[in-house]
Picture (cartoon, rainbow, N blue to C red):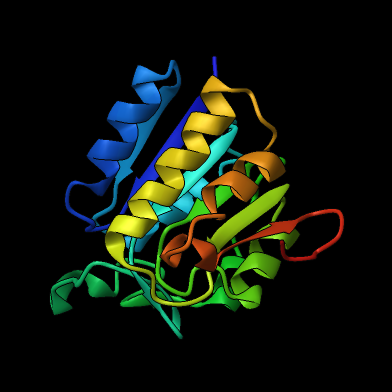
Length: 181
């Protein structure tokens, strides 16, 4: 069974739609509903055995945005407001997983490099600020082709990113070449 994990960081119904579709297509899906950065660190440093990890979150030029915490608890967690690309390198312990970031600017090379150096086999994310609906459609199209049609990661990505809209912003990076597709 295809094992998928969603890291859900304040993105409304997006994780629910992804989970429902992936389970409909036969995947086993688990979700981390993120309330603080410690949950992200714990999961991504645990050597997760999920074939696919989807980060459903928001981003900007600084990195992955985090939930706002009250001042009295913010110091209890390793990162506040944002996890920058270089900071991921401090805790990532992946085992050849495929990672898809749906966060804006989640496909910049600095993030891809951090995840590939941290053990990801493939890393995919948008290089700009895609429309939210296009982001959801990219990941659903990818999952449909990867799970239902058993296409490899590169083929599923090629199909999902070939539409004449913001889905073209998604770039694929590989552990072996470090190249973007």
